[in-house]
Image 1 (cartoon, helix red, strand yellow):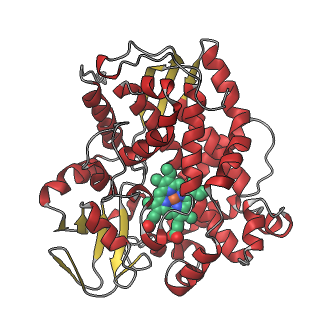
Image 2 (cartoon, helix red, strand yellow):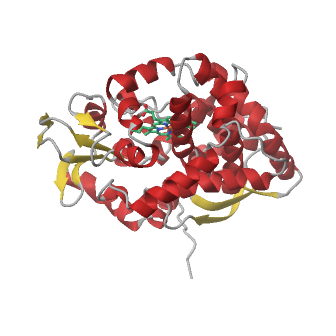
Image 3 (cartoon, helix red, strand yellow):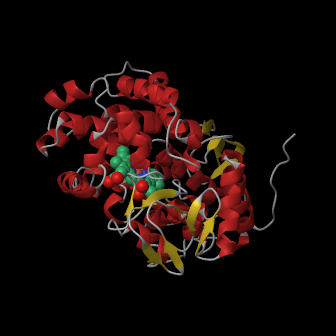
Length: 419
Ligand code: HEM
């Protein structure tokens, strides 16, 4: 039997719930994230390679394409080349990647992401908010998966029948694809049967890409890829990548940020002052850091801080540990120049969907809290998953008593437009 987590201090309670989510995903990941910072900013760990926990050194590694690559053993490009084909080596790093990024620079901007998210999310978000207002219950983890599934179907140009089941299935398929990479902590070389499974999943999910690429209007993702001069092969590869990079990461950020706002009691401040929404999104992304580890291979000998790294070695950048050095979720925390937005990586592989992810998070939080403060009535962390997350987080409207530390004088104002 699992005992409920209780703590009278809201900040500690929130941290304990986050710890439980990490532990449930993979106890080994939890141990690494907690223990590695005790060994200093960078150190060598048997079987894993170099482990970096300092935010400045982390950005130093990610910003140095001359000495680090994601194509070698240890990097995500190595995983993808086995599944998508050797063209990955041309477009995932080096001059081909720089060229692709230059052309794809404006794929997602704040200005294009916000209306896209509103259009794609609202048909599912509005009924959920209405249910809260009517005194009903909403499972935020399930809702987030549904919303992100809707976004993926939109981006991949999939014509799906109406009904939520198909969108949940898309999310589940993206999750299955990511899970195939679970065993890659010690090596990114995939077994032949894993490669075959991954290829099957990608073929199914990107089945409409060639047609949508040819016909889609210029304002859609695939239409824009065409207008930007990408080839259909590049657009298919990018679509597969979006699916893996942008499903579980975005869904977990949404659910866990809402849980953090609830557990710390800071949702009351956000309800009273919607201008805090951007800070809530930034703090949620920092504390949850949905991609907790970024892998690279050392391509040429290099010294990073006190570490002399040799070509062929692996580096694990523990972004979660680096981002959380500053402390727990706090709406009063200013922008941290040493971390910048390390939750989205850094350098030439900085998350391509960052603006979209921020808009998704803003829209969900604004929408749900437009019904006023919420109360968590049940939660379950997901076990054995690549990206730590809640399997379920059930909420109702009408928050718990405002914790003394976060009491607000102003009456609750409506947040966002997700009513
Ligand atoms: C909260 C949500 C998200 C987080 C925390 C996140 C995090 C990251 C991180 C850390 C990287 C860098 C990986 C590396 O350097 O090896 C990355 C890359 C990437 N992300 Fe995201 N991501 C999120 C959402 C999305 C979304 C919604 C999309 C698009 C639909 C997306 C698309 C991409 C792509 C295409 C890359 C590869 C960029 C490249 O290699 O040039 N991500 N993401």
